[in-house]
Amino acid sequence: MPPTDASADTGPGPRAPAGPGTEDTLDLRLPDELLTLFRADEPDPGHRRPDGADDDLLDTVADWGPATTPLGSFRLLPVRPERDRDLISRWMNDPAVAAFWDLAGPVSVTDAHVRAQLDGDGRSVPCLGVLGTTPMSYFEIYRADLDPLARHYPARPHDTGIHLLIGGVTDRGRRVGTTLLQAVSNLVLDNRPRCARVIAEPDLRNTPSVSAFLSAGFRFSAELDLPDKRAALMIRDRSLRHLL
Image 1 (cartoon, rainbow, N blue to C red):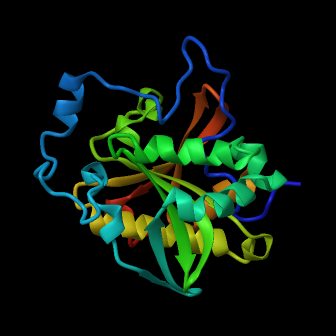
Image 2: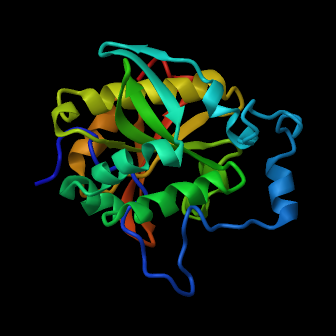
């Protein structure tokens, strides 16, 4: 039975079999000259996080402060595999989550998925969503304009995407997903001044997830035929932030 609210499906969807034409967020390599165009107004490449990791493409997610929500203080904590992989793997093996993320299996499956992002160029940052002091959700904040998704919609520079799952069954429903989506999209807009739009592409079959986005201030823009799913393109516009 589909989970309520946005508990399991704002993720990348089931993986298509590897082979010619397969698209994947983590494997995309854009030509250097095209990437240069997107990075023309990026910050000085010498700007680094204190721990040495470089996620300049997303304006240093690790430094984003907490958000105040009706549920309490919420923050994004970039994943450390040695600390977090068992927890994330347990969430991925929940049938309600596995139906949309397709990352069930041994811990090594989750570990490989997370490390591919951490070892990349910073266009996708995996994070724990921490409510108070409790990790209770998993997010991927990614550059939608540098993702294969950009081939399927009219992307704009600095479009920023969100993938989300809520880990615990007890945290699902009760508008928790809506609250988190609004909080995280606010964090994106607050900390990425060049980003005019926050993007998501939940599976169109998951109407509770789509509903949660609408309640969080996103608008339905289009149906997208992606390689692994038919998706609802959801957009939260900076210009409409306080109207929707």
